[in-house]
Image (cartoon, rainbow, N blue to C red; front, top):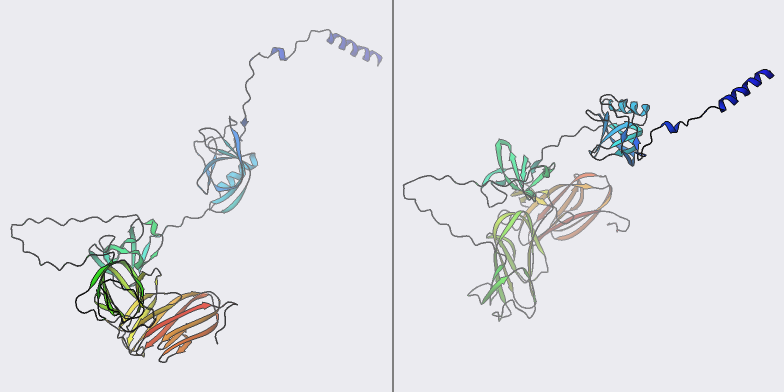
Length: 514
């Protein structure tokens, strides 16, 4: 044992006596290379292989649950890419073999699915950013794009005109009927006018208020009417002069007023001027013109107005009497002393119309207000007007009418809805409409002169079928949340005619009508 120990000590002494050359002295001496950050990507994807290292790449941002669909890449340094739901593309590789196999598995799922990705985005100038995936989860199936339906329109009125361009001044190309469906093929930049194609290749422009649009109107191209020049026909015959029509007064921004020193607009006028609006309160001492010397006077106001297609509400109140004509058709006939009433009715109008308002005052307070307003509410009532008070026989007039206020409101006074068709006395009417109700108890109210009945889904709610003016209120308990049908019936015997029906949902602060 002692001999073995001596031999080992001798060997150590011999090695220590040998010369030693340092290993680092044998490496070439060069300038140190600056540090380059690298990322190492596994080269196990199918198709194009991932480079084992990407120099100069820096982790820019971490992603958490980024949603997209994995697709196979070709001609790239990464084997797959992620297309996000907002159409941004990233190369995508797993941080290890398990993550990479998970990427391939989710990429090949059928039907295709969305995934959620967690990882870090690495980007280099001029290259597609790459996400090194730490984790990813399967998401929902990739939604199938829903084809965009071609927009269409449905006519809301009967016998509406189609025009060659986006204005009623163009030639009429044809007519469409109530509930007819047509394709929407063009539009004006503001969607006020629509170009449509109906069955039998009937095409033309129509005002947007006259139709119900189904689909996205903005998907139709903005179109302009094509001007069509009339053909030139050579002829040596002497042209026959055409008869010249009496020129129609032009559209005016003001009313032309003339005044008379009596109450019946007779004799020569004593003055006149142009007025922007018919909204006066002269009181007991003032007069509209210095040429009026008597306490009794009368006035006539005339104007040609252009009406964009739609329904208009006309409102009249005066002290004392007033009459209103539309194209020589009497709308209001309230040629009597002051009553404090506000008269109103609705007309469907389009294009140029002449209007005339006549007024008289017999002393005391003098005032006149006449206005018209385009109703933006879509027509919801189907109205039928009958001769007699029993709603019997063939209707004298059938038309669509808009909802006014919360239900229905008219004051025809001594007139009717249309004096050219419906007499001022002894007539009746029925309105039917569908309305959306929230669940709850509702209060129904009616003011009428003369009789009125109100039905909800054919169940009688208000029943006051009698002459004279009356006000009624009824409570309807437990209306379900749904669309319900309201039917209103009315008759006018003689004298003043007016009707107002409305309803509202009951709350804890409202009194309950008995």
